[in-house]
Image (tube, rainbow over all chains, first blue to last red; front, side, top):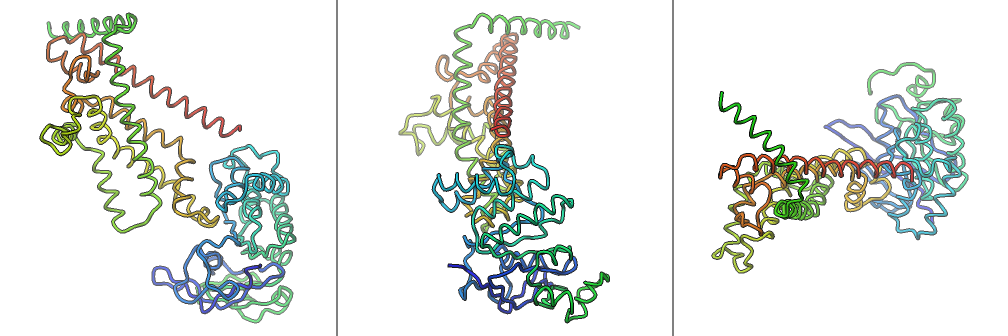
Length: 239
Length: 243
């Protein structure tokens, strides 16, 4: 059974006395959800709160109407800078499955399948930390994919990559989506948001300003902040 | 300048004697070296099996008093061997709480004293190493669903090569100390006499060349053990990359 929809009910997140996030939103099954906003808008915090890495200061994060479990096995996240375990590529992929106590033959089969899907079969026995940035990001995506999560959070997955690696990563993201995983990702690349996005969550100054279908968001943004953001105007200040 | 000449002669004599002792495979020497190694390696084994998990736990678990524990642990790294020797002596002496075990002046007592001496060293250095890796790993591991215990084991495994340094530091301290083994071992010939206590004894008897020769062997031994450790670490990291 799918754990979606995900609902953030009156969620706020404070750090050092400063409000960094405030939103009410429901994320449902379906096309990719893109989280947009200028730097410091709270995109990464939004993903971390959804994923359960950060506890909201107020409000609830609910999955299918239930309050979330700290270690929800049906969701995964890939970070902006991939954190590789100092092990081989295939051991990195197997790690999460081992934690979930998957059977050995299941692990073996799924790891080799995902290695192939992310184009790293050749690198299976290589130390993950010795791979290139693009390969590491693909491995990080594979490490999430191998868990077959209902939801996958991606934090700026192509921020540090060249155009070629970005294209490869986007193909993998679409493949993961096709295999039945809901993608929720942040990006500052508007082209990428148009290519991949089904709906857009626009954050500004830690506040959710808009949540609408991608087409509508890009054609007729409702708020002046979103219009300014889309026009490439620099947005100063947090309010 | 007679003193300088004496010193020079002593060094030369010591070198020749060291060479002689090593090449001659002197039975007494082998016994002393063997006991030194077995006592200190046993102590390292104990210190490692307590210190490594303790260090990793301090890196991963967040509890009240964690900071104080770390400060205390770091302070314990500097415990004077004679103090530990005396404490263990009192515990193991006939009238002490553990007197019934009849362990005073045995190699076991020496292992206990050295283990107490170096466990804080191994634990404190492991804590530092593990914490470094924990800060890199923790978000990713939590995201993958790791419990604190999972994280501890993962970090111990992935940091194993760096942790060898903590182990070697402990071993170096154990094999080189004299105060603790002297007090709890008693420097009994053919039973609890190790390299450092022999050096102290021979020096006090005026056999400077013999003492120096033993000192040279002790240094060589240290180099060999560290060399073996470093080669092991190297081959582990290479096999890790090529497997």
